[in-house]
Amino acid sequence: MPAATPLHLAVALDGAGWHPAAWRAPNARPTELFRPGYWVDLVREAERGLLDLVTIEDSLGLQSSRRDGPDDRTDQVRGRLDAVLIAARVAPLTRHIGLVPTATVTHTEPFHISKAIATLDHVSNGRAGWRAQVSGRPDEAAHFGRRTIPPPRIDDLDTPEARDLLRDLFDEAADHIEVVRRLWDSWEDDAEIRDAATGRFIDRDKLHYIDFKGARFSVKGPSITPRPPQGQPPVTALAHAAIPYRLGARSTDIVYVTPADAAHAEAIVREIREEQAIAGRADQAVHVFADLVVFLGDTDAGARDRRARLDDLAGAAFTSDATVFTGTPHGLADLLIRWQGAGLTGFRLRPGTLPDDLEGITRGLVPELRHRGAFRHAYEAATLRGLLGLPRPANRHATT
Image (cartoon, rainbow, N blue to C red; front, side, top):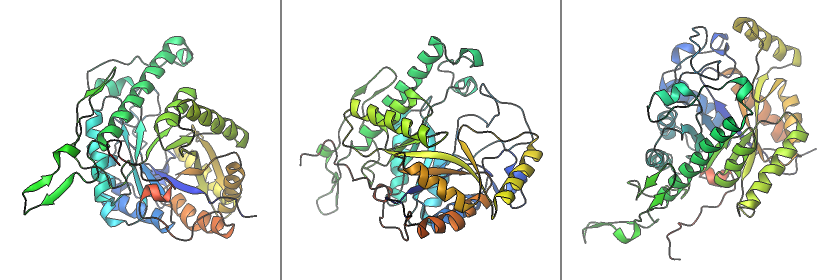
């Protein structure tokens, strides 16, 4: 039976894939992970599948299997290119798909992120977004020397001290996002005159100080970059619990969540909608996408065998913060439509291996969803906000 509402689909790109042994899979391209052509190929494949957007993982520290810092392993992918710069390289070579790099708010100045994402929106003609990420790792704090973050201990994660630290980090993230949004609005849409005859390039009355003062930031503005084509590129964030849910509901356009099943998804969506209402955003569209790690095959047994071979190479069974699906595109389509009934508006799929599971999504899952009336047959908007059904917001300083 066709889904009542077409799904939004995103993929999360990370190195050779989300399985730690993905770089050793037969079709992997480990020698190209730090070359632009690799990322161009992946995003073009996602665009061939008419996906809404790709997110690109990033961090301020090396990948690790530990919570508290580097693990010194040499049998897994370590090292990344800058996600914003990858997106900028890919932008001119794609036409429709949204480009959503990860940029960490902790330790990073909002002025820098504001102009980077605004620039990406200009060079992509309105297809930029931003995945705002919080860092609670001590080794990442040590790169900057501005503050210390205590190492997490399993038995301390639910203490008042740990909750206070988490709340502080996410309150800082909320302020960071607010500063970025105000900077995007610090140029009105028609601030650029560019009239050579009169010698006027800008209308200075349409550039605005933001004069933000908070616990962490004091930012005068205006930005040095004109307002992005989308006005406000979509802001997204990953959330696992109440404090991050609140950030997502109050500050973002898409919240990525990690439900265990449909009932859990329904409870998460309800909590996010309640936080939206508290924040006065009940009338605004905030998407809730469920994250899933996917290992796809022509048969369930084939997908299980492929995952098992990767586990053998890694020396341990794969686990994740998100639900892991192992099976056929048909079975994945069943799950997505079933979970959609819980109030989810889309899904962000994390391919277990690249390019195999990305192609399983674009060449297997997408046709299956189309057959059920649950996914688009063509791109129907020119901007990422348009693909997501989000209106272009008016500039907060505009007089009309």
